[in-house]
Structure formats: C-alpha cells, structure tokens
Length: 131
Image 1 (cartoon, rainbow, N blue to C red):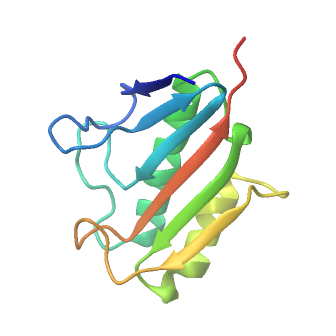
Image 2: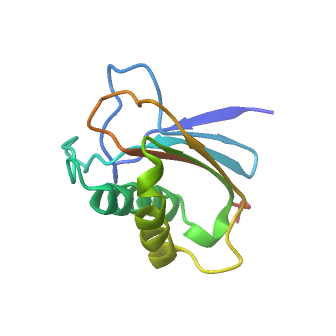
C-alpha cells in the first residue's frame, strides 16, 4: 500500500524541521502531534492552556477540513499535557470541538514537549474514505 505525505497549507510549515504533518495510507490519515502554532508558526497562548488547546484543536480541524473531512472523521487521538492541573481546562476546550461519544483518546502527562512553552500536543488518526 502506497503512502502519501501531505503538507497542508492551513497550518504552519514543517519545512526544515524533519517531519510532516500528514501521512495518508489508503483511507487512513495520520496527523502528527499538533502544537499551539498558528499558520505563520507563532505560538498562540504562551502560558495559557485554554488558548493553546483551542489552537491545537483548530489546527487539527483545519487539516481534516483541508483533506475533505471533519472532526467527526477522527477515530483516535493521543493527547500529551505537561501539567495535571491543566486537565479540566483542557476538557472544557475539547468539549467545544467534540461531543459525546468522544473518539478514543490516550492521555499522557509528560515532563515536557519539544519547546518549554508548549503545554499540550495532540495527534490524530482519521478515516477518510476516498470519494
């Protein structure tokens, strides 16, 4: 099965940093962990878990929509938070983007992400059947 690497224009560029935002294999889309960077690569919400979580979900939504789908096409999420005290704020923002039944999610608390200002990172797997 062929793998297609996709560089969405709706999110920040990954040129020169050694990864791609999206790989598609058949009808399955794998989205790299999204962080709170806007389309120009600027951090949104330094020190603010709600603003960062909102930006991360907005990035996921933009990628999925650019590929012709919606957040409802996500079949699995993995979430990384750097502070347990951020859990409730994270959930409040998540609930603005998703409704029950929520997609499966693995939630991990980690000591840090790629940059010390990143508070949350979320990766996704989506099912987007070919038209």
